Length: 105
Image (cartoon, rainbow, N blue to C red; front, side, top):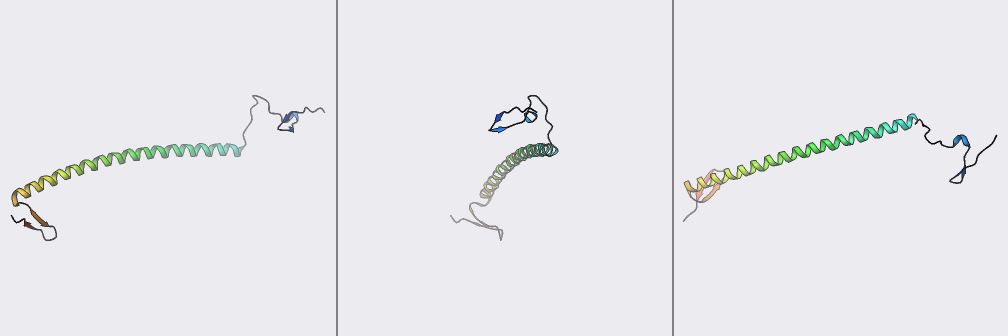
């Protein structure tokens, strides 16, 4: 029997163990399982990013709605105060008792 010696990282390989170019190699079941696990985790990760994007978009919409409601509430408050001042004049209001005390002139 003849051996051909090839130096690869200072080890000697038998001809039967030398990888051939373009020769298909079947992965083991463990390797295939690892590939499947990685693929599954990537898919899950991408889906989580998609959900996060949609949640952020929804939060942006909620923020816009809340800011609009706040602005409308401020306008309503200003109009109410303007009407109260024109009706009763300036003064102080006690929300616990509901009593308004006009400011003395």
